[in-house]
Amino acid sequence: MLGTEAKITGIEVNSDGDTSHYEMVVALYDYVARRSDEIALKCGDRLQVLYKDTVDWWFGIGTDGTQGYFPANYVSGSGNLSPPVALCMS
Image 1 (spheres, helix red, strand yellow):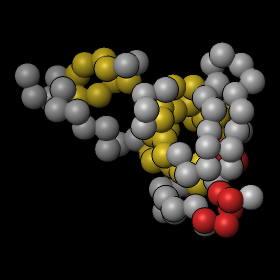
Image 2 (cartoon, one colour):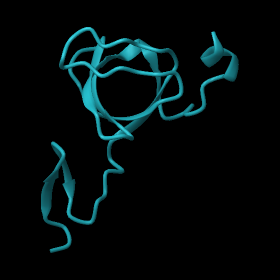
Image 3 (cartoon, one colour):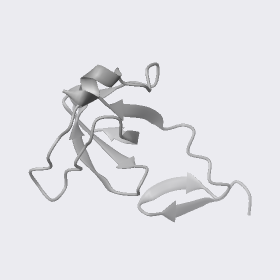
């Protein structure tokens, strides 16, 4: 069944588990979810961006499987997946 699509925890992926086409980001700041459809962030968390709802709010999934919206300005793109240590300690 290689190459067919399957739904796994709400994410559409190929049956071989390939999710490489999703953008990876890392949280630069902590964020407390204010609504049930948002995801809480801790500095250093890595997420896959499933879609960019607006320029300000993106929808993604964390490495622990939680899904939700998060503020786009709280994350850094795939070019920099290591936030400065000092940033996470503030």
